[in-house]
Image 1: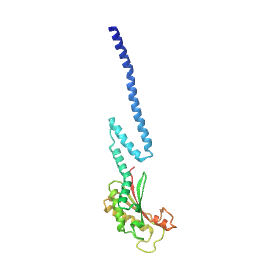
Image 2: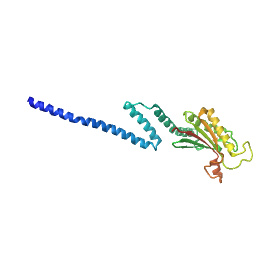
Image 3: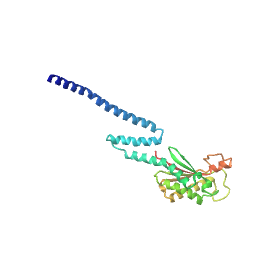
Image 4: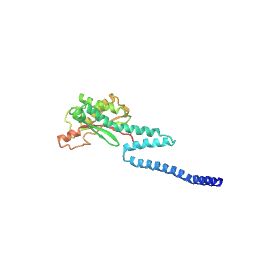
Length: 230
């Protein structure tokens, strides 16, 4: 009986020793799976900024789980990008609540959130002073822009009809003056001057043909761009 017991214990010990490789193998497979998941997330993130933000967050979580050092700057950048992505939606919501949706065209891509406002909304013909209605439109926009540290670029554009009289000698001067009026108003409503810039392009960057009334109306515009972080 004792001999049988000894042999059984011997056999169990051999089996246990032989099974140790399976533990090491299982750990190796787990690390490989995590490694390839990270690579897969990275490959997707290259073409999708939203997924890239998720990738940054996931990578930090993985580093934290395995005792690694969390990159606070990378995590903060991911949070900033998330806020940037929400700016367009918040401005759309604000415009809708104030029944101004038709006055502002909003476009968003991986580089910027661009707001397009026509001359008719902001200025009288040939002038650069903001209308009262213009200030009502621009105020909620400024409220959203001041929440982020991103640079804001204001661009003035006109049609190609020569200016024959008035304060401004050329369309280029008029476009610059209009851009400045918007920059000044946005600054007065809380957006830091350190992140504001304005420029005027006159009739050099049309978005429509200047041969029609409708086309010229589209070309007379102000573009406000929130520049997204890289």
